Each structure stands twice: as C-alpha cells, then as structure tokens.
Image 1 (tube, rainbow, N blue to C red):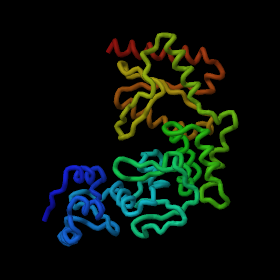
Image 2: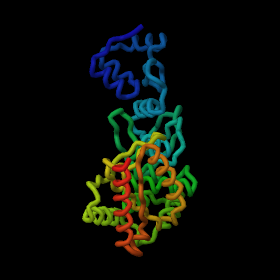
Image 3: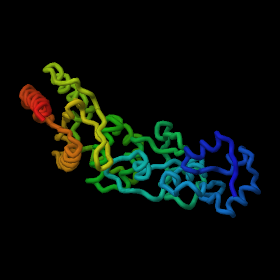
Image 4: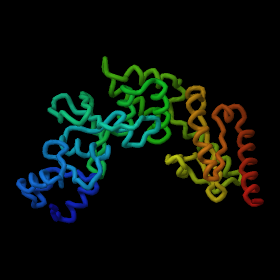
Length: 313
C-alpha cells in the first residue's frame, strides 16, 4: 500500500531523513485511520508517539535525532551526539540520540538518553534544515566534557578552536554554565586553564602575519583555509595553500600543551595529504617568536623547491 503526498510534504520528509509526524500527515490530507493502516502494513514505522519513519528510508543516527526532535519540541541534541552531528573530530560514533531539555518539561522517555538543563539561552540551540535541533558548537563542546576523558577533551577543544569558536567564546560558555556539581565543569576548567592568560585571545593574528610575510616575498597566490579532502574521508583546512602546486603552510601553536596531541594529529594529516600529492610545511609559534625572518626564509625556500620540483617532473 502506498500514498501520494503533496510535493512540499514529500520533500520535507526526504529532507528529514524519512521522518514525518502525524500532524504533518493529517495536514497533507492523510486521515488518522489511513495512518494506522500504513503502520499495520509496514509502510510507516512508529518511532515515537505520533512520529514515524518511512520504511524506504534507512534507520540512521540522523533519522533517530530528527524523530526525537519531531516527538518533543522542547528537546535538542547535545553532548557527543551533537558532536557527531557537527562532525567533531576525536568523538566516538554515537547510536542513541542524547537530548537535553529544561527541568520543567515532561520529555520523551524512550529511544534517547535524557539530560536536563537549567541553563538554556537562545545561542545554545541551532535548528537545521532537516528538522534536527542541535546544541551550538560551543554548547556541544561544553556538554562533551561530561563524557570525554581529559586527553580526549583536550583534543576536542583544539578541534573546536580550529573550526568553530575562539578561546574567549569557550571561556564565556564555561562561565554561563558554571554551577556547583554540573557534570564536566571541573574537566572544562582543568583543560582550559592549561592556557595562560596571554594565550586566551584567538591565535589567528600570527597566522595572518606569516601569510602576509610570505605574500610579500612572492609566495602565492595563497588561499586561506583551502579545503583538502583526505583519503580517510576527513577534510583539513591549511592556514594557507597554493593549489596549482599542491603546497600548503600551517602555523602550529605548540604552546597550547607542548604539542603532544597536535603532533599525533598532524603527522597523520600530513601523511594523508601526501597520498593525494600535497606537501604541507609547518612553522611553530615558538620558531616565529625566536626568529621570525628565518622562519619565513625557510618557508619561502620550501615553496620555491616545491615549484621547481613540479616543473622538473
């Protein structure tokens, strides 16, 4: 048995990973009696009360998140589940949606991991086009502290700073969420306090200085944050890149924690970049502080060697 839906309704269901609510079906002219028949015949699969997944749509993590948000207008996806939706690095795959809801609500009770919150501002929730309400990257980062050990949370913090937020933004989020006994708060303070006060502004100023110095020396044209899709399925965004010769430069901030997590991550990224023919050369903030001109000289020389190498090939 099948049904013919208005195009706008069918498109909305497709965008929402095959999830549809009883109210949407009724609004589209599908009576409740027919909905019951479609469930009996297996055309619709009940996920939550009044929320269904179309049988032909796979039971994905995103579909389960969309179903949870369709079942309860007060919840949003958070923690490592939200990190999975934002594609944070250093988080394990998540099968069950983790949802947060204000204390005064009566939320859905099955198919999710439920957490309550007494701090919820407008900036904390983002509504996606597929109907999933998800914690903003800074709120997701904070809520990850509840489940991630210190070393993994340090790596998550680095990734968020690279892609989504500044250090002041994360400190502001931590201050907003401060409450005695809040899960993960102590871990947030331990990890963030490893940065000295002088490090708390975002580190982009040094990157701009390095790229501008290279451009003045004829390196380029440099593309900022050029996206490279690696063979392992991840994307990286080097600080500066010259795509015609597949050369990139990265400014590493080793003073964050001595470089042990950066080194592990960056070696793997560089190996994968080489697999697609890219050369990534790095300079550290310590090198720049010690002798900025010499660091730039080395990068300029590496750029010219790379260009000559490709011309000779």
